Length: 234
Image (cartoon, rainbow, N blue to C red; front, side, top):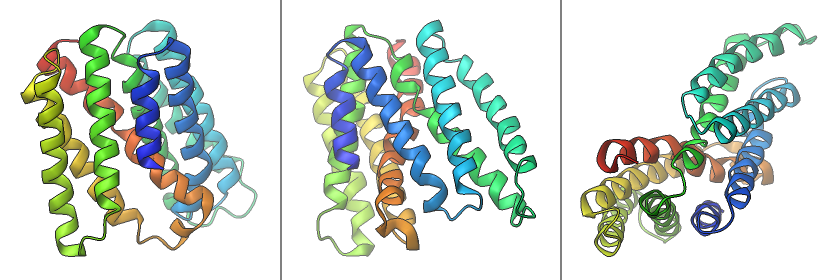
């Protein structure tokens, strides 16, 4: 599913803008629904509501203003939303700190997804989105291979960096330096998510598994955007 979501980002980047916006919003929605169950948060329905509202606000503001700085304001608002969610609980508020931290962490992930939208629609920007999505899909495919656990992460990181290097070589607007850095980041991210969340008891259920799959694609948005700003001045 991670590879499918990443491929969706890459494909819709070449189409009409609403397609990419819808893809990012869909990834955030699937993550928001499954995240509370994946990490075992109390009051999961309310946590999902906070995450969905944060996703909608982040996507809408960045799309309307074309300014990723609004994502910081949304994230700040999500912290307040997490506390309001706790105030509205009527179950005695067990595991209060865990609940707040889990919701805020989830909000940070969905806010990170708007990085895919903030990159713009120019040639270099679309090339960067394509590089990020292809390397994420490649990393997800590599982690699915039957490689022994001690070597799986290393193989994923190295091969994904090579994929990024190859894409950077083919796309002059991206370049090999940016390509290999994006590939390296994607490999580290996917290997970490696979290793960490694959151990969670709920990861075998549908929505928690979807949340784990969407997590890597969502959280990669801002790092790829930052690399583009630093190396390509997008």
